Structure formats: structure tokens, C-alpha cells
Length: 124
Image (tube, rainbow, N blue to C red; front, side, top):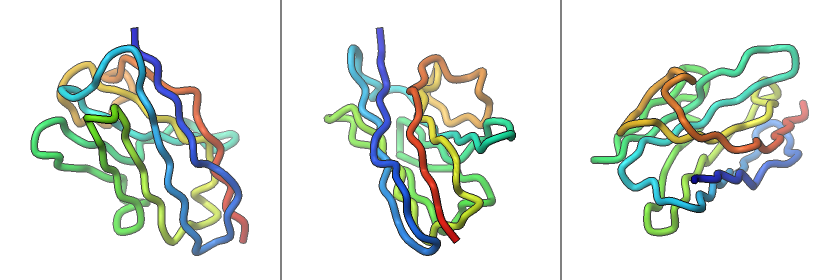
């Protein structure tokens, strides 16, 4: 049994920064890939970023490249999403998830555990 809990969301002005954390409990995820997704009101849930278990290589959606950074600390069973230069269009509920395998993956069906999400609101 694995539980993922996101934290670090909040209200920030455009151009500001936030760091999201996703803490895992129950079982470790050192051999799994991890990803971040987001869902804005009235829109579908979209891929944001992913990280592999091995060399730690990462992948980002085009909309966040150069602004967001995903990282992980396997010893702490935690994955992070550093968000810089935030824009109003980044406003969404952000979810972390664990892949069934090593990852990364852009497909939601490849993730077997999901957090409940944390709200990020960016004002103009």
C-alpha cells in the first residue's frame, strides 16, 4: 500500500516561485518513475514533468520547460517540483503520481498511485 501526499501549493503572484513536495508512505519508490500532472478548472488533467529511477533523467511538458524542475530524494521517499517564473495559466491542482515501472511516462494509465493534489493559484 502506497500513499502520496502533496504539499507546498498556495497563492503567488505572476513571476513568483513555489516548491511542491510529494511524500510517499507505506512503500518506497526508489525503483519507480514519478510524475507531476495538473488540472485547471474545466480542463483535462495534463502531464507536467516526470523523472526516471535510474540516472534521474527528466522530461517536461513544453509549457513548463525552463521554468519547472522535478527532482527526487529516494532516501526520504519524496519528489519535488520547483516552479519558477509562474504564470496565471499555471493555475491548477497539481498531482504527483508513481509509475508502474521505471518511467518516465506521459500517460496517466501508466501511473498506479496518485496523491490528492495541491492547489496552485497564480495571480496576474
